Amino acid sequence: MTTTIPAPPTSSQRLSLSRMHAPTLHTIPAAVAANTARVRAVTSARIMAVVKADGYGHGSVAVARAAVAAGAEWLGVTDAVDGVALREAGLDVPILAWLNPSGVDAAQVSAAGIDIAVGSLDEMRQLIADAAGVADPVRVHLHMDTGMTRGGVPLEDWAELLHIARAGRGRIEVVGVMGHLPRADEADPAANAPAVLRLRHARDAVLRAGFGPLIVHLAATSAALTDPSTHFDLVRVGAGLVGIDPSESVELCGAGRLTASVVHSRVASAGTPVGYGGAFVTSNETHLAVVGVGYADGIPRELAPGASVAIDGVRCPIVGRVSMDQIVVDTGDRVVPRGATAVVFGPEGGAVPSIREWARWADSIPHTIVTGIGARVQRGIEGDLTNRRTDAAISSFAAGDLLRGARGQEGVA
Image 1 (cartoon, rainbow, N blue to C red):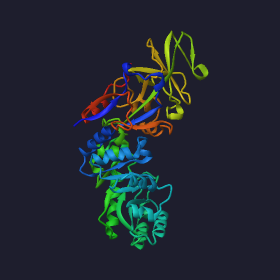
Image 2 (cartoon, rainbow, N blue to C red):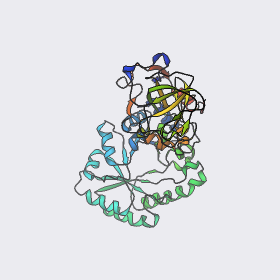
Image 3 (cartoon, rainbow, N blue to C red):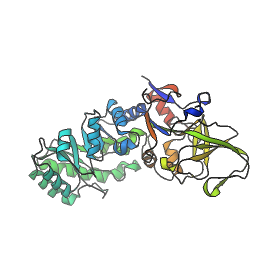
């Protein structure tokens, strides 16, 4: 089975002066599906597709739909209001919301069938009070602090948490136990073992308190891919859906392609300073192209040498400082006309930079690159005729092709 995915325009398909396009992040559902299948191949646990931060910048609804279609049985979000939005979009699988910085409307989540994680005694007390009079008890996952010291109930408070939960029966229903792995990115089962043991103790205490059956979950993307001992009943896959394995031990498919138009081009003689402060000076005569995307759109301002974009299958280095609305790239002896498409990142490999490369250039992690894409960057879904750019070439990619693209050479000159 193949999925139709628009490829970046070639030189024969460049935009005319009247057909410039705004910076656009194209989400690739076929890649999300391939990544979901990659996790399914290594675990018998159910998969929760975590689509927090607007699906890691790729669109929560688009990512959720692709993951569910590929076999994910749960969805996860940071805030209950995000879960309600998924329900309104027609997604009917179980949803869990944790942290909930906007608070929890007990009646709303009860009616929408959204599970709530509780990570402190105060949260539990508040939720029970708020759930007075709800038609159906709020389904709760008890969050154990398994070593992160960032959220979750410490082991020494676990007995009191269970006492409060028992008193709140009828308003809440304890259906799950969860934790987080502080060292999963090391892809080392020995590093995960203390958290696994803590969660087992927590689960056993909940069962002894008379709650159950329980859904127990601990692993996120890295552990889901590398450590079966952490899988329990459910694994939570978020960054992995869009092609990011924090452990960098498994190749996944990039699920987004960020493109922008060349808005200006010129010849620069040797010794010409470029950008604010003249931080870069040309060493010889060359052609420069200005691409209409900058730090207001999520391009990191501080970049290591080598940061590049791809234009017509050729990698072009960024020169000078990143500006709010634009970057300048060196196209060498090639004249790139206004309206040509620059691919900032994508899954193709070869000349097209990957998210992982951008993270290295920014001295950061891939998560910050994809979640930092600005609001003025348009969003599109590749393969969706209502969002497809009419000038784009059409190619046919199977999941295997996407995986091969993820393994493409990085750093092609």
